[in-house]
Image 1 (cartoon, rainbow, N blue to C red):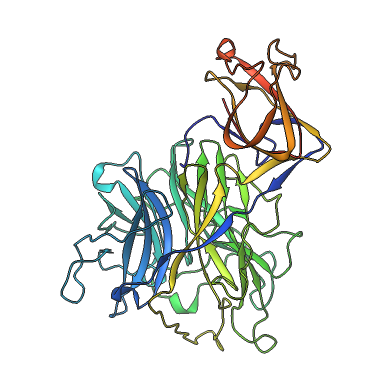
Image 2 (image 1 turned 120 degrees about the horizontal axis):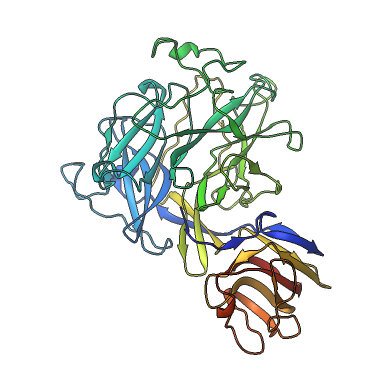
Length: 487
């Protein structure tokens, strides 16, 4: 969880009673360019950044590297601010006669892609959880570590399916269970030849050391993959309806579209955010040039329970780069964020190649040479709590919140009026009656751009007499963006 408090975010109407000439707007982050580069010999076989984890006041960015023998290892970068990253000498794995490197052993396993999280309820020996998958290793499985610097595989598999791509996994204290968002294939429609769309499905369990339950009698299952017929009893196949789909395309999306790699985070106890890749697929040969080809950008979705998701904002959260930059054809968001001061750091990987570029047939192996200076991860900068804002028009508008509990001695707003905007605030009781001393007429002018703007009435910010009570905020403003409320 990124924050564990009572802040009110306005990415939906959960905390909004009424709006007049105010609309909710998606706020894309600023692109800050690469923040981590290939600069070590052991990274030249290829890298893939996966996730960010906080541990003991430090942030860790885990990425995979391909060793000369073809087997993968993990590698680690660390940061205090999410902007400047270092590669520590962990001293465990030997490479070319030296242990002076940032490599992390993974018990001889060969995961395709991984998600690592800190488990707040686990015993110390299993504090770090790593969820990964590989068809050759019978699907999805668990690895654990006491310190996140060396992982051991747990017995068995969590799911014996073709899971594919980056998953998002975490312990959700709101429901007391582990949650995994993973790749699904929706067979209800989509472009040929598969006539299906990428989607995000959700699994939950209270024990990651046991197989995850799913609907074994779900209708319209995928056929077993011919390549993985004998790998497990019954073979491996894709997921359709065996697990519930929570993110997928619908009639408002292009028919060529698909959503996957959800990059889901629990931002607050009752606020979940996702940053899935939108894949616009191109036709297969002979109509198209390559197999499984297309372009990808990043969208935004939100939820209050992690199950029902809102995609009201269909525009791109992160758009493709200009031709002289790195992510011109495809990108994925990494799971995890780094708050720092006024901002939230997010991270993406991307490419100048389309998804299937070079794949003439489905069996074509395409190799891409990695060189010193290539980016491993790119930083995005979002305003603190700034993903969506309630924006008043230039001529003015009003917003009234639903009741919330006053828990501190002042009420603060994450707000931006800029110079041509202005706002005034009033407090009402839970029945909508103005509270004397906190009316619009007594409100001091709100003007400026601040993530922690303290409201005052007649020069005083004191709301101590309202502490513990339910109140509403009435905000009258013009040309103003309201991001969050802190009470």
